[in-house]
Image 1 (cartoon, helix red, strand yellow):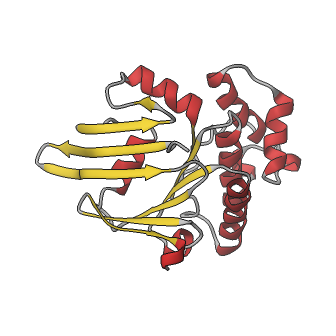
Image 2 (image 1 turned 60 degrees about the vertical axis):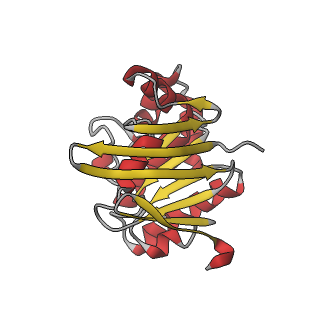
Image 3 (image 1 turned 135 degrees about the horizontal axis):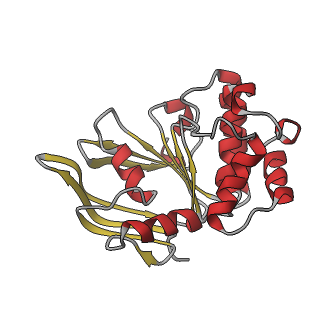
Length: 223
């Protein structure tokens, strides 16, 4: 089976700073991958490239058979909308829209809105009863679950989560990780960027970055 994500000799340079140096990575469909590393290691840069938020200075990126490296910003936005479900640490919910409307916004930019489908997505993360609430009326854990519902609504090829439990207490962290486990059992490909070993421990595979290079790549059987 072909890899859903391939990164080939990718480097990213900002002036004198080499944020990524000759990164090679292949992710098969359905794998749960954690990306770890200290501050400044390059993990955010790598996440941005995988999420079509940035382009490499050199090298190739192939997502679901499509080469991304030479696409325009508009084309990358289209790929991100069609193929990637993004879960952010800071939630990025629209403050004046309800939980349901925040999910429907993702539908609007993808194709067309479907309230019943959006409500089903919220139900999937246990928030159907909170669908008409504004973000300020929701706890941090509930807001993060709205983000997950929004990320899933357009059936992405890959789910990319940036520190998905970074702003949550232990109880809500457990709930979010349970949702990710459920998605993984259903066959979703998940890439989680995290500094927390307890979050990374849920993944099948962990890569560790230091100074823009992969210094460790291990599967769960190695731990």
